[in-house]
Length: 125
Image (cartoon, rainbow, N blue to C red; front, side):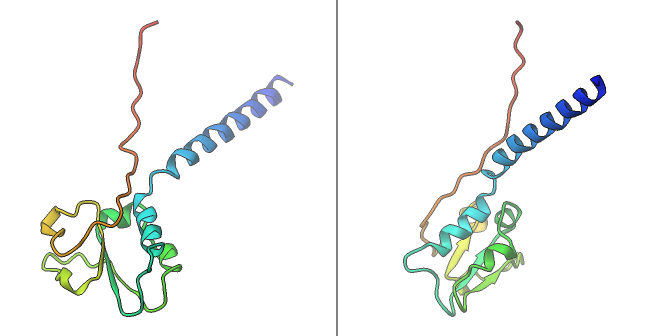
């Protein structure tokens, strides 16, 4: 009986911790939120327009699943060539617009923040 109670408590505790971790993780995908914000622009990107997404954006939520919602005819690029010519893009999703001088020629239309981390403090009781 004690073993069954322990097992039930362990399952309940694991489920609770999983829910907490899921809630925290859902707020830490700024790249995906930025892609959704791009799709929500008024007017949204149109046919023939191109969007470049940098590595940091792709690592924090930009994915092919987000591209499914793209407007018809929009072209996405995840190319990371050092000599990348950004003048061929209409939109840029990046973690740092000043990196490599990427901010030139683009206007900031949205800023999305992610969580910086989680810190636990030890305190004497």
